[in-house]
Length: 416
Ligand code: ADP
Ligand code: MG
Ligand code: MG
Ligand code: MG
Image (cartoon, rainbow, N blue to C red; front, side, top):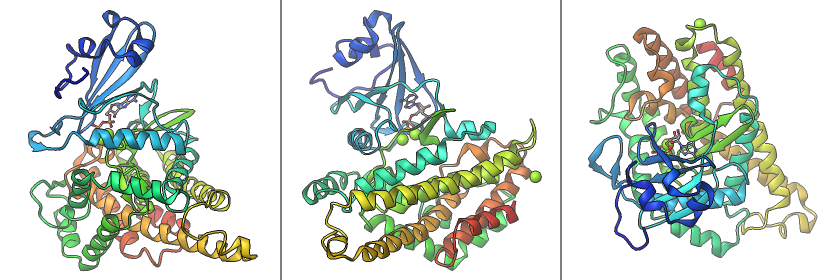
């Protein structure tokens, strides 16, 4: 495909077009033996699984539009460039947690990566009621390491500023988040949808809720301006693939320099939505253990995040912020502890705001999630969604007053 103009891959053309790329040939062997299929569950891009008798690979290609909507919604191909650059940075910052990239073709917007198998999308696993004991720890480490190591706490200033500039061009994907997450849910935007008429009253109430609207805009303000680290940008349970003993993070095309709390808040929101959806998935047996597991997972993820972030604070604080020369090197170790506590506290407060807004947009906005959507009984679905909406509103508006996760847990259990 060297030098050729961009062209979308097809199942039938993939082997002919990629057959001479060494990275694929080395893994898969002669392209005559390749078997190609398309994965249908992403929203934006083409994803192919290519297998041979030797092995398998994944080929992901951006389209000049949103796959799910079609050509009427254009979206730049360069999202693939941002995804590639993020995958290699995340692989360095938390080795083993993202699929290995074997090849990138910028002109074709193609990323060839490790085929994760027998991995399942985490959201699907949670809907099935699978208990995955490692995810809290694995994801806590992932967010701590990627967020800390991509920031001014750790990076050399020139490199950090170069990356800020590089990712600042991911404008169109940020724009999707800025509109679909932070604004559209709070007015009658054209693309919105909700379970209607069941939710109509609470939706009207939220759209008239001045405190909630201001909160959502405060969070958008942080999202758009607090460029503190390279965030994944789309860290929901559909961007995580799991087996019982492996956890992988995929699909960082929304990456940009933003607030640390955004990834953590989106992740926790998706566990809390999984929690509130469990009532709708009890046909094959009650889900009390699953509910406990989901709330435990958030607690473990947060405590691992704080512990790992603190460890990195003490061992890798080599950037331009809170320099050791001001604190430890002057015999003021406690000063560094005070600053760490304040940084973690800010992340805590902000993550609650981001989480509340994420819950709302998944129920009121364009992009709904399967946790609720797969609940066939409308009354049950609406009841689950109502609890989640109230929960989201409470944690977002009261984020500065919520004392800790035990308080959030008590709130979730009381609503449930
Ligand atoms: P999109 O950006 O369109 O959402 P994703 O990167 O999320 O695309 O991929 C869509 C789907 O393809 C995923 O939900 C998953 O099922 C599958 N997939 C993506 N990457 C891999 C991989 N490395 N290994 C196995 N399956 C993958
Ligand atoms: Mg995806
Ligand atoms: Mg994506
Ligand atoms: Mg019940």
